[in-house]
Length: 209
Image (cartoon, rainbow, N blue to C red):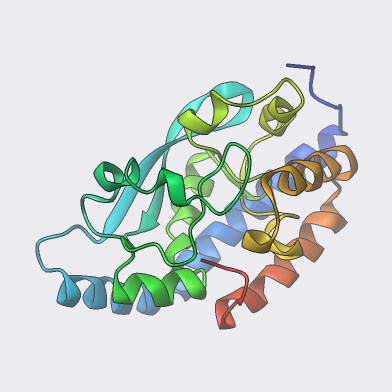
């Protein structure tokens, strides 16, 4: 994997400050929503957990647990092998619009991207940033080319250029190109514009599934 494209130390410092402030502010402001979603998930499936944690690959290939609200049945990972043949995107990523593993509550919180909100905890921990490439699964990284591996040069993000440019309507290869474009041109202003564009997704994105 090629070395990271250098950026000014001031960018790294202020990006982290924005991450910390944004994560704390977001968790406090959205705490009522967190509670409401947790209750809905428990009502639909009392025995299942509210949160879902999954191993993801971050900067320089370091693995970490990423947190989300659970939007699928509890045995979703076990069912995946039988669904791989229905993958609707090419490349090292799985997407299925009418995934039978998604719960009723899950369909709503995925459509509005509310399921992603617990990743603010990952931002506080430093595993993720507010803005950056989507953190891939280990099984996806195994199929990466040397070119694709450039996505792992920076800290992954809760949102990014791919998410605000079409998300699930784009192919894996288009996602890689957008992420590399972001890595090469990232500035605080670019990050702020992506964050602002992402806020609208909470009102309901047609591109999420």
